[in-house]
Each structure stands twice: as structure tokens, then as C-alpha cells.
Length: 267
Image (cartoon, rainbow, N blue to C red):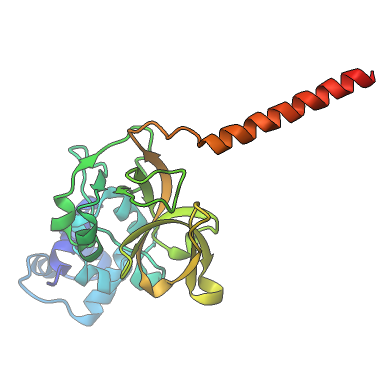
């Protein structure tokens, strides 16, 4: 679908400019602007170039992306020049939902929803059906999403925890040693410590906190989304320490006591 007419009207209104203002700036007639905004006529190549330069947004974006679906944060990114077609960056325009005040929601992808999320993460209708919530201590300037994790690979963060991640637009921004929720083509949604090896190997090294799980390489081409770990929620009380750990601590304490006693006897 061609979104050009709706997009240029939306952009003009957001900048509080009249059709006359835009016509004068682009050296066009007001009737031409009106016809383009109402899909009465189709833009010529020079007109597309003029609108792209005027609004600082790539032609491909003006035509192919429905800007009306973007959140305020995504609009800010576009207006600051973070446009994938202009700069060649890894900007990823994501489907999102907002509350009544136009603040981004935190959508919750539970265990049952994860299979569908891998194939429909860019579908606004799918995202719009996910449960949502807000956390007052998180920044309103960033985009967050919550996922349920399963398995023991990231112990001591237990299976069943809800991990919350901050959306990463450019995969190059992932710092080595950072915990991330990674949406992959084949493995689904995985939660790991990540080593960024894009420059050297075009891949990430995926590392579990639980050392019983071996690290592995994930080609960057297999990655659909990355969410930088922010915090996690869990309603269960942590398991008590194993008896072996308690015994080792008791032995260590006894050794310390013996050292202190020996020191006193020497004195």
C-alpha cells in the first residue's frame, strides 16, 4: 500500500504548516499539494525528492511506512535523522501500542504467545492483542517489552521469570557482556549474555549464566530483534541454598575461627 498521501499530510500537520507554506517551500502550487495529500494525483520523481528533502525522511519511508502507526519515540528518531533508507543504519521500525496519553506500553509476550511473536512481531494487529502494562520507574523515552523465560540456562534468574528489555535499534550498539533477549528465526526467543562479534565474525556469541550450558555462535542474519535486559520480575521466593553450599560455608567459618584462635595463642 502507498502511504505517501497520508504521510505528507500527517507530517505537515505535525509541523503546524499550511498547504500554502509547503507549496511555497517546494515551489509548487497549493492545488498540487492538496491533490497529492488527497490521492487525487500521484507524485512525480522530482516531487518525491522535494518532499524527502523538505521533511528529512527517505522516499522509501514516505511511500512504504505508515507513519501514523509510529509512537512519539519513533517519530523523534525519524526527525533526528535515524532513517534506515537515508543513513543505512539498522533502524528497525517496530509495531507498538500506546496508552491514552500516547506513551508506549510495555507489551507482555508470555510463554504461549512466543511462537506467534517470532513470526508476527512486526504485525500491528498481533502486537495490539498482547496484554500491556506500565512501570513508573522506566523511562518514557525508551521502548520496552516483557518476555517470559523458561529453562535453567540463566540461573540464578529462575525459569518462569518475566524479563523486561529495552529495544535495540542498531545491533552494533549491543555491548559485549550485556544480557539480552534475542528474537531469532529458528530458536525462537532466547535470553543470554551476548558477546558482540559482528565486526569480526558477523555473529553474536551467546553465553548462559549457568555454566553447565556451553556458549554458541548465532549469525547476525538469524536475529530478528534484540532487547537489552533491564530488569526481571518473579513472584516465587528463591530456592534455599543446597546443603553442600551450607556445609562449605560452615567449614570456611570454622577455618576462620581456628586461624583467629591460633593467632591469639601465639600472642
